Length: 134
Image (cartoon, rainbow, N blue to C red; front, side):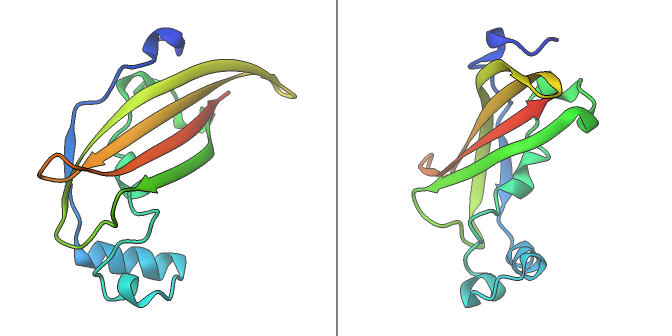
């Protein structure tokens, strides 16, 4: 499958993740964040959903050698913090595909959006990433 504009709007199947206290603590320790709420595992650091992205790869991106990817940008917008004990169901869709000329030739910029919703269907966070494929 080629990476072109026809992919915009296509999405992954929903996947559910349990937010575990131990995972929150390990991430806080790994990134060296001294926030007590992170270190005691009650609230997840803002970058926690990045841990989901490795299991939420869009099928169109699976066929591409990971060595061809550069992670260009990542942002998260929260409706509320992620907490230990939450279950979050996530779907990632392709929000944009553009080609640009770079110093090294043509590169494809793929923008993905991930929504994380709680068990009540309420939006918890939206993540937006830009992947550069060379």
